[in-house]
Length: 276
Image 1: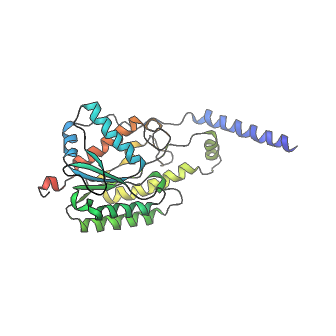
Image 2: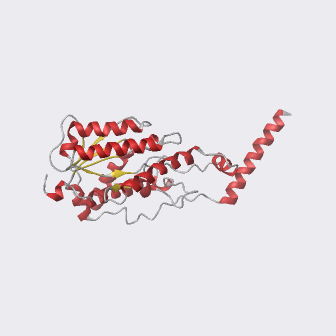
Image 3: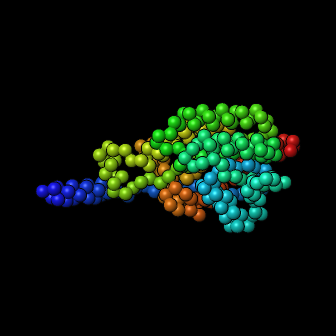
């Protein structure tokens, strides 16, 4: 009798999954229209190259740096000087970068960023930015506390390094979970972990956009990489931009890297003020 019930349960779940797929159709995974965003004009590229930038990141940051190399190669532009920071910082315009903190611990990212600035980057860079990883913000993250700590740290940095221009970033997303289990859970009104995680990321991203979006210094990674439409207000990384559901493939790298170039080109810095 138990085996019969098990088989019936499995058959019911399978039929339910088929029903979900048939009724809802394939999930929308086409990326937003970023055809313009994936190309960078030479004036924007040269403006970004003229700055000395400090970029604190982890693995998605490496994807973005690869995207910069792809853009230079595809467009025939002079390569941007990308230098991993060490004991000494390079001289001249460059994009210095460093992996800071531990994935899953957003507070360690904030501390790693400020520590790196205090170690020399803050006094020598024109522009600085840090990005959280998708792992840093999940469904159980206290998003308000993370934002409060980030805002306090950025306020302190601005006072400590008045000649440093800060660029703020949004948290990267992951792709929508569209397997049959996730479809059944949604049909039954049960939560799907990736939905909850991306919802938490979007909550923080809304806070960042509200606080810093009216300024030129916003590098909106989530908006660049998301699919359309969102499901119930929750955005996702476009599958067409992803290599593994979380990191960026070649297309995604170019789109997001182009967004970084445009953000760097748009902000004012000590280079523009002639105070370098």
